[in-house]
Image (cartoon, rainbow, N blue to C red; front, side, top):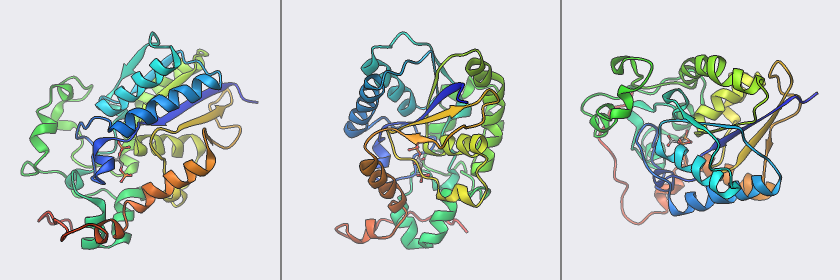
Length: 272
Ligand SMILES: O=C(O)[C@@H](COP(=O)(O)O)OP(=O)(O)O
């Protein structure tokens, strides 16, 4: 029997989702479309009568902004919001800022799919010469984490995301859910995938086929041991959701580059 409802949400479209670049720990804001997606998500949740008691976000602006917009649209701005780097998007290492379609042209669609969706393949680490290294690691927010800055990841597989997320889930979020509060986790494609893998017991092979669109709330109904009692529900127009999932999957295909005017702008970086 369903005892708890838990909502997972990948933030609304970010500026680099739109440009098809790996955003990861770069702190991009929502695009105009992402703002609308977050507002529509809040309106839908309100229409369906849901109420939150507690919201968790990453320390990246796109997940925080999404949480605000959802709560505003629901008239629930007062609900406490707690932030942690442990809910951050997967650290994409040296891939950060690169265009997925260009990477598919350079390294093959299969390789890009492995980098994006496999369970235990870690992309090459970010190094100090990377154009976004200083912006990420000099940011004050990373001095406030529960691990020293030097121990923060330089690249992560989905497995490594789960390893850093699980202690926070178990120690902080689970007690809140078990106290009877309805929780929204406003996070990212891969931090939500990692949590789904854990909660639904998805195999390492099957997690490859799980892709989440931006701005679509995922409802999980859980029993007293936080095991799902029914399949996850992606709330909203199902045809639109299917199309949005396909769009995210297609980001790693070469036709994004082929259809653009002019030659692709390859970044000279060795990833093998
Ligand atoms: O880091 C990014 O660019 C995307 C995920 O990229 P993919 O795994 O879909 O390539 O994360 P999000 O937009 O959810 O924060």
